[in-house]
Length: 168
Image (cartoon, rainbow, N blue to C red; front, side, top):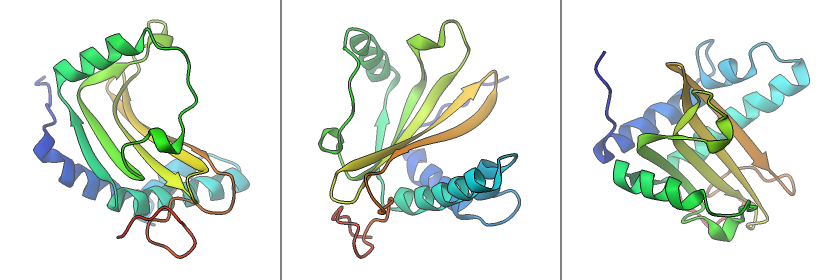
């Protein structure tokens, strides 16, 4: 099987496809996939999260890390202490980074899980942040998100009340 290599030129298309999938209300769209097999309350939260990420991705700054840069960052990261990420640490209010080479978590303890991309969004006036990542486990793609919200504002670039300052 040939290894698929993602290049920096692929990022606009990846962003567009991912945003469209997360905004697709159909049975194979992101909201349905994210909420499948969950209780009704959690399913509603996951459907909303998929829609929020769709909006955020459309405004995302695109970043690409070559294999050499990825290996360097992983190596340097092993020496760093655990850190709570803050909005001001991010390179932009909304973003998507894709790694040429998958990043394997040192906490995986031999598990085959690796990440191939991550996205982020700053909420409100920077008091909260969310992160999402795409990964592969034994050849299967998966997506996950984690959001830390201080208030009612989700990733809503350019929407009244968001305060992130991103223009769509």
